[in-house]
Structure formats: structure tokens, C-alpha cells
Image 1 (cartoon, rainbow, N blue to C red):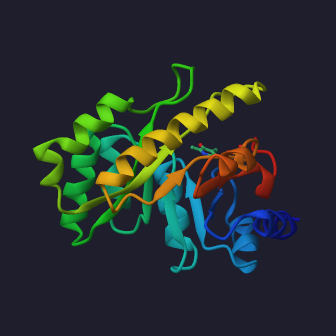
Image 2: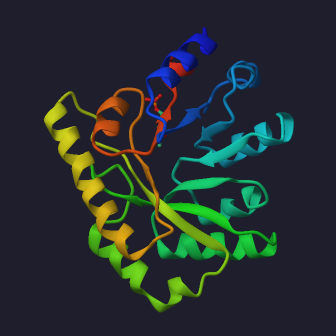
Length: 216
Ligand SMILES: *Cc1c(COP(=O)(O)O)cnc(C)c1O
């Protein structure tokens, strides 16, 4: 079942779009079924859960932290995390840099942009993003690499609104890309809206329930 879902989605994705299989709340067996079908990138939104799965599952899995992240949790995953999607403050970026340095590595990050109308979704606005990218302190962080942006659209049936929010994020992405050559990833799109996200320029989709089924 998981294998069929996964392969079906993979077949529809353009080559330039990376699939993150969002496995939060799902047991190891489910991840291993996707793994057996060739999936290597998994997304989790709780640090503790991701650490446990990292310890138990094959070491060639790339672990993406896609959830809202507290600074005091960075240390638990600094050794192995492949990409952190939801970085929404300079203080968090700075903490990731510190823990990456202690582990002798560089950690790739995406800055999360607030595009939804709901107050509940985290993220920076355009001004806050620019303020970070032009600051001296940011350029002194040698152990993080900001490789792109991430965003979540409003949870609504209004397709026009969702499309407009994706376009907004794509436009910010294009603007900062010209001055930041390491910026190549645009993480937008989930089970319900990934096709539209791809039409609007997404290069990385985070899909959970369409692969693994509904979460409890
Ligand atoms: C859970 C989650 C997803 C996946 O959601 P689905 O609708 O199950 O595909 C994607 N992105 C983030 C940030 C999530 O927390």
C-alpha cells in the first residue's frame, strides 16, 4: 500500500522536484516499507521521534526536520540532521551554527517564510528575511548553509488563495536567489496542494498522508 502510493506520487513528480516522505507519528515498519521502495529522505516534526528513528533505521536515510523547532532541541539532532526546513529566527540559526560547529559539520537550513493568513503558522516576513540576509552576524555563521526557503499555505479550500500564497513565496525566492547563489531549494507543497505548488515553482514537496495514510 505505502509502496504503491509512493511510486505513484514519484511517477508524477518532475525530475527537478525532491520528495520528502513525511513519516511523523508513523512506526518504523511504515518507513521501512517506503525505504524498500527506494525512498531515502524522510521528514519528521518532533526531534525526539526523529532521533529514535535515526538510531534504529538504516544510516543512509536523510532526515529532514520539518516542524517548528525550539533552540534547546537542536543539540539532539546536530550530529545527523540533513536539512532543517523551519528556521524562523536569527537566534535559532545561530544556535544551529553553534551545534554544527561542535559536531564539526555544516548544517543546511531553509528559512521559513510566513505566507498563510492564519496567525498560527510560523515564519519570517520579507523584511525580516532581508534583515537577516544582509546582516554582518549572519555572514559570520560558518557552520550553517541557507540553501533555500520553506513555506506553508493557508489550510483552506480556496485554491485561488493557496495559489496566490505560493506565488508570493516563489517571488521572494527568486529575489533572494539572485544575490545568494547557494539558495536553490523552494520547499512548498503537502499532500493536498503539492501539484499546485509544483506548478508555482516548488523544488521540494513534503508529503505525508498521501503516502502513509491518515495520521491519528
Ligand atoms: C505534516 C506536515 C506535512 C505533511 O502533511 P500531509 O498533509 O500529511 O502531506 C508537510 N509539512 C509540514 C511542515 C508538516 O508538519
